[in-house]
Length: 234
Image (cartoon, rainbow, N blue to C red):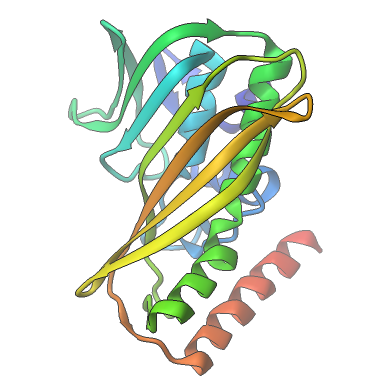
């Protein structure tokens, strides 16, 4: 599957280089979060990349829950360990970076799995800054626009049925809960195929370093984001 272009696999270990992680974010997800820039000192591999690799390897279960427990630096060795319906992605210190619970029927059809991956990560990539800015403006609270920190917390998938057609992910609603300098964004989405809903999901992300909303700072963030996107496309 196309995901093989974005990691190196050897001795049951996955390695994601900074370039591979950045290319996946920008080329596949359309995500220009500066945390995925190769020269960022706080660089982290997109959570959506490891999510995509897991689905490519194990298929899509009727019910799946992803708990993102740590950031993945470039060239950090990762192993996937499966036991009793639970899958753990662990680093070289045997610390979980992602835990996955899965249950029910499993769909491994490549067209379905790849279609879900591509649609979900494209949807997910729009989180920053498109969805987030509207939520921050509404709540009067924003991230540090000079050093934005927006990271995965949890994601869930639930299917009532699978389909022969590649599924499409569509945003249903979203919420932003602010507690002091931290915020939690929750996005609920539908999964559709063959003109009907076949499932649903939820994505949660954490934002830290919140402060009062200032439009000039948000304008700076949007300009920097758009400049990064333009530079990559040239």
